[in-house]
Length: 226
Image (cartoon, rainbow, N blue to C red):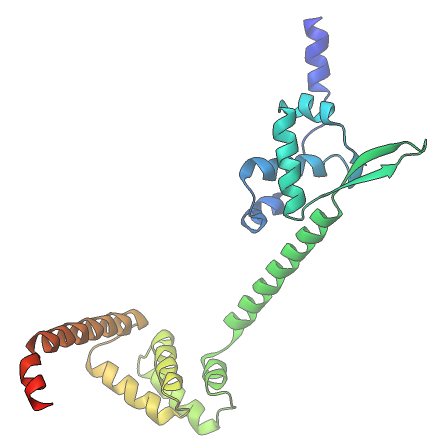
């Protein structure tokens, strides 16, 4: 009897989990147990008769837990529970995973779109990025200026940091960028991180200065002048 039971267990259907589902795991925004439960349902069929006893036996879960999972998956738009007539005309509860597949298709499409956008951005040259920043094509002379920056040892990340500062100040020409790079070079900046550290130091100094000015303010003298 024990051997027969063991053989029956070994003959049970495998639980298939596509790798892309785990790659998209964070997009589901579900507790891990519900995520696994949802994959289990997808292994049954796209639409099937709800058989709680079968699920309880296969997953070793209580009916209360199963109903909790189903309620939450319904609320979050992953499944639908429908009451329909079967072939014999008897009303039965069905679980439909149509919404689940629609969500996965959207997740995959968004993921592919983001990947393509990243790849396109990576293919852009420094000249393209400056043109994008200025929202206009750059001239041949401007290309030569950018080339000279690179030849003089300025890293692309530092040039882009200067571009960011230029655009932030409402300017769209390379003269302004050249002045920024010249000043940064004098200070020994080599990377965008060097620029950020200097900014933070400046902001801290300004906040400290404001505090000192606040404490030095002569409130009584101010009242006398009013």
